[in-house]
Length: 359
Ligand code: NAD
Image (cartoon, rainbow, N blue to C red; front, side, top):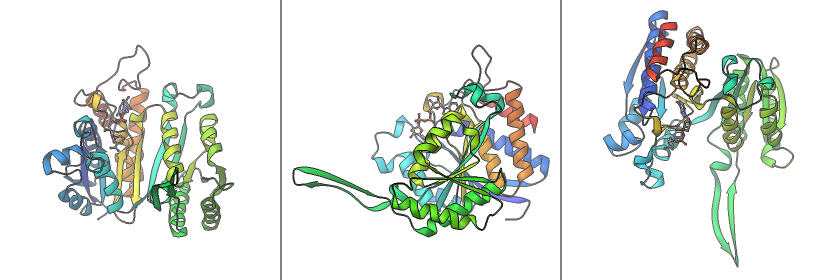
């Protein structure tokens, strides 16, 4: 990958995926034109589109397109059309989980951001979040309770027993800790490690490991918080957090909480990183009710493009996208999910055009 040329795989997927992806690409083109770099792309089918065109949710040619790329820009997958299929063949299970596995995407970075101009859209009392908030959740994605063996359900005399196993290697904890500390260095230099060290052996090693890794980052402050308290603190005072690092299951729950308090799902993007290719996507799904109506908020997809540029080391370029989104919101050009009652709302395309014009 040369400094001025990057190659990405574009997997728009289903529902509103293609509509919001079109806006993200429009904005990427504007930024690359302004700053003089190129992003070539290969478009591939995924999810329901993969099933319809190639017979499966993650076709081989799509995997190849991702392998040949420096990064993947993902839209969203799923919809009622494919819900009758066996669970493992459905768009989400059949595409997203295998993609994560194939590329060893062990860290999920999910911003929980509420811009100052959007505090009215957050369910949190506005006096608690004046000026908005900006949290980055770093969730371990490939270990822990969701993958540990053994897992089973069996009869035990007259009773039944179920077992799930929470299993982590220290090496998995070390690598996720490094992702969090590195991220914090580029932000407000504070990591809150979330665990349940008062109950779980897993969390004891987690906490020890975080402390050990933190010694290589003396410029970053490390705090520890139990997961139940973290869930409460997120809604009481989100501004106390900079980077949150946590295990797979705790991260699953806390990242959803962080997205809800941010206001609209249509604003939030995420990055999944591993040893090889990284993947960038809005956190929302395919919002089938809005598909084809040109009403979905394209900002999450556009901001996924900013995360992608940051991954390529193009910080100023990424910041340019964020500023353009911020200005567009403050100018009042927003889709219906962000419009105040009685305010006019814009179409998906219009918002994309406004952001492009701001670049
Ligand atoms: P969803 O995110 O598609 O929609 C939930 C609600 O969030 C919508 O009703 C809408 O009010 C709001 N919303 C979402 N995106 C928005 C946008 N861009 N602009 C404005 N509002 C937006 O979640 P769902 O309804 O639970 O799932 C729909 C489909 O998406 C399902 O098939 C599900 O499996 C799939 N899904 C895919 C992904 C993914 O591709 N990563 C993630 C979640 C859900």
